[in-house]
Image (tube, rainbow, N blue to C red; front, side, top):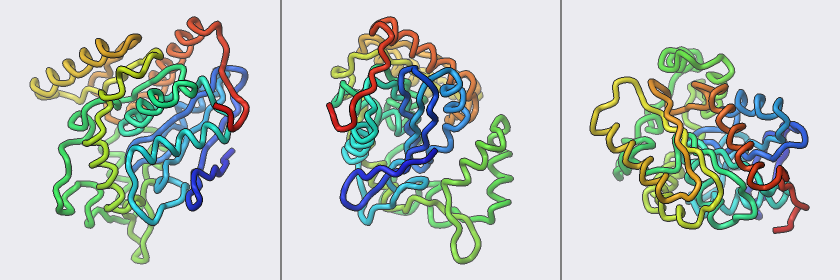
Length: 297
């Protein structure tokens, strides 16, 4: 079931909901330029295990409204808080992929009533470990460049080739990141100016600044590509070690030879790690799922 939630006077966010059962609610946050459907396989497993699941399309993404002006991390965090307040979600497990992990981290820091545990799916770390350096003032930002256009079937073929473990549903979910132009070609749904604005906000708002304010259990799910450069691997290990030291209840899980989109590459394993986090949280809170009356903090 999809619901549309107003987060300000001009933007409504789409939320994909699975009722689950009496378990702790789960809020799923996608990465930059992605959409909530990328969580579908994980969400199905979590709901089957009894957890109500809410997967959000952030503003400008998926089926949510595209704002007229660019936005930043602070806006994204406020949007998620508004969704939680409107739907009565509290004491939730927050699972964020890439940029979504950064947003989930900041939300847990500024609204501790909303978060009981964090699952950072190849997110919540330095920008350089989540897609490269800060874009220049040119249009050279890879997939989101002005030439990133192709027929739907050609794009589908490319996705299947570079993501051989993805299911057909994950490939179709990734295609939902794009829109068809008048020429029949697919191009990025998120406009370049919006993408660049969020990326710069990621650079200027590193998740580590929020670590001291996060007291809930955290699981770090780190993707390691095939044959990573030794310098990159050393850097990744140092970041994870620093995060584990800074966060009072943090553990890491390493996914070797894996895709950055762990939730599409290994949905069963990601769901199992989130469910293990749920059990850890419930032991600390006597199993209370933590839902709230809508609008109450």
